[in-house]
Length: 110
Image (cartoon, rainbow, N blue to C red; front, side):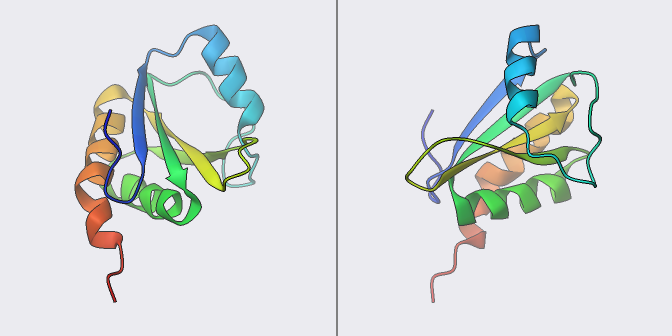
């Protein structure tokens, strides 16, 4: 897996296992706009990288496909963040592809 030009790493988890799901749900940031609990989706995309790039990636992912995104709490001291992209496999694939293809356009080259 090669990082994107913005330093993002993209991963796809199909049919999340119970253990993976428990860990992910334990670390998901709870927001009023996101259901407190829900069953595991068909797929989860994980996007890791510098905070600003991750936020831009979340925006690209949600605009590209019928997915939900959530911040995942971590313990990384170097300001690297993770978001999870939830949905069916084709939607998560489309969202990750949109991030991979579009993140460079989001990078400001003033």
